[in-house]
Image (cartoon, rainbow, N blue to C red; front, top):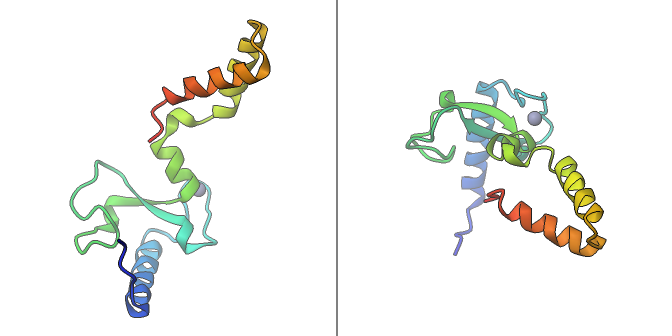
Amino acid sequence: MAQKRSKYVIRHLRHKKLQYVQLLGGKCIKCGYYKNLAALEFHHKNEKKTGENWRDPNFNPEDCELLCSNHHREEHFPQLNDFQDETNILLSQKIKQGLDKRKALLSVVESVDNMEIV
Ligand SMILES: [Zn+2]
């Protein structure tokens, strides 16, 4: 069960994150997003090492680049980029093959299962 953090710990963590964010330029390196501190994330440039989480004492912000949460997800799940286009292409192919729209959609959803979304 998650332990409730005291307001002092939360304040300390927020200061720490703000410090790291500012150190890395204060905005997403891809799109320049900076509005919400919670939506800015640390992306490890190489494989994660010890201190992988910014809350860990060993965390080194120099090993990271700053990304907004959307770009961070895109970085980790490139296979899902343009999923709408691919889904629509597959869907129209299934419909052309004679499947009704509902069955075609189920078939397409099953193919997404093979895309290793974790
Ligand atoms: Zn971004």
